[in-house]
Length: 379
Image 1: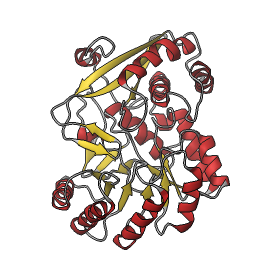
Image 2: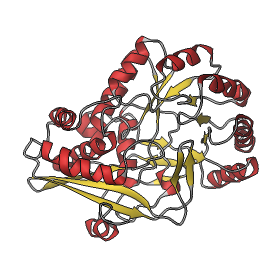
Image 3: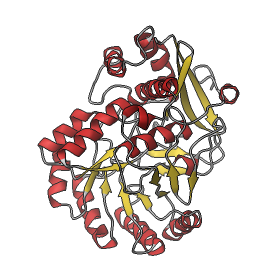
Image 4: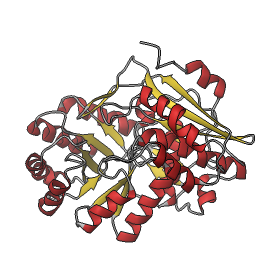
């Protein structure tokens, strides 16, 4: 079974509510959210993957993802055996080489996830069965709070609680330190003392500011301070980890399993965030998760405001490694997935790991084509 076609579709999905991080807007209410879906075909079988262009978070845009897949990654894998995931990732690396990051991880992830989906569909089994690893049948989700005054974010907590969510993640670095701390305190006050709560700086602090913020948060029962410093500030993260009263979790710093190996050797990581798109897909993410387990590093899970294809990919990964803490898979909170028929079931803030073949998401290609936009020519 050899790969004979790779197609990209940039789809405009309805946005449910606005969402921002320290770098800027991720989703804007009233404005469509762009996602790039990739379909890989081989001898009559096919699979789907997703890339989430967020220029406020990383350098890949909808335009760059489409051209990277179409002009570099697709030619690199056409004609290759669909089962050779390791070989496909090596071909990706030759087509778009590493810089500080692995080079176009979101685009690579979309193709890699589609290949995994294709193999599961061809075998008629879900990804966990294909991998021989599925430790959980359901994954608890966290409700994400971002922006607004303390009163406004408290209302946001109420909205999540009304939908059954019991865990909360707060985006910080969007305001001054005192205001950030006040927002987290408001979330804790409304969520209750027992609710899991962690904060995400999205690289928005300096080392000194992050330590000051951590000391402000220490009495609020915050379980982790996620990526407070820039991804490449290895020395700063090492110093912060020594002095920080809250466990430091790394996200953007872990583009590749070798990045985690570096932080482990430097004794500079408390918690590793598993994130499919950041690490270039499921194949490299499984390597990173296995390394974290073998090194005794705690794993947490996160996503990239994915629609349902990306949501399902993350659920299979997190279930395979038994991640039991609530995870930040917030796509359903901010975007709709009208292209998905049979898909992930979420109830009471808990997502069921799909049982269907591959990802377990049935993509309606007619709807995908209807929602597609030409980002290379449109303005």
